[in-house]
Amino acid sequence: MLGSAIYWFLFGVFLSQICHYFVSFRLTDTIVIRLMVLEVFIAAIVYSKIVVDVTWMFLNPSSETAASLSAWSSLAPVVIAIVSSTMHFFFAWRIRQLKLSSRPFLFIYGVICLVSLTQLGASAVVVIQFNMVGRRPAAKRSFSPTTTVWLIGGLACDILITITMTFILLQARKSSSFSTTSKAINKLISLSIETAFPAVTIATADLIAYLKYSGTNFDLSFMFLLFIVYVNALFSVLNRRIGIRRIVEGTVASTDIRAAVGSNNDLLSEADSP
Image 1 (cartoon, helix red, strand yellow):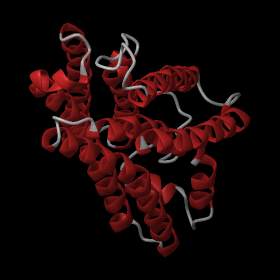
Image 2: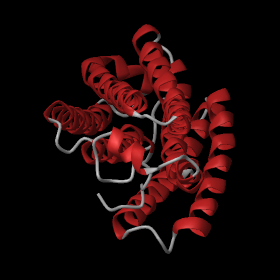
Image 3: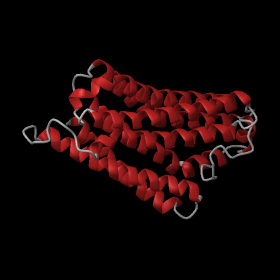
């Protein structure tokens, strides 16, 4: 139950992120972002209940329910997909705002949204199929194709968003004529990769564990972590806005960054409404 222990550690990180957000942005963010935060917070409470249920089942193998999960716990895939889709749409909107006049990037925006919706739908089907086999973890291999679509879809969106955001920032650095602005963009690139790397790593590990060790429950550890890593990644971006904005304001001309990415929107103004 190492996955469960790490989950609760990261859940503590999440609570500190929530407190930081509440203190810094509860009065300044738009209603859309505040509703997104509320949605993620509720999902985190629900998923924590799922983690408790699953952990209890494996710690009590002699109990009557040891062979199957509760109806509540069977919702895990769709709860993860709801949060991951929220993050995907948030970053897809950012890409759209930064490159509003660029058709290739608008196409990427559409692909991210479509693939994210596909993995969300696949997660709902996984829940239905899981309940049809009596919510028995041992029977999860019977609906392997649907689970694979769900996991690959989420991972594909994570990778596409990371590559696209990094490419946009690299373009901005190349177009910049100010060395201080280039340094600021380097910092933004570093922060983008730092935020995305844990989610991509855990999603990849979860997919590999499911495909290679589907006859075991090894993948459940990564499934626990996948949710909380998504949540912390999203709040990390939201809570870093003030610090990142200071980086830009400390450059020779912060407008140079906006001009370099070809957008009239502040690259760092995440508080703007989608």
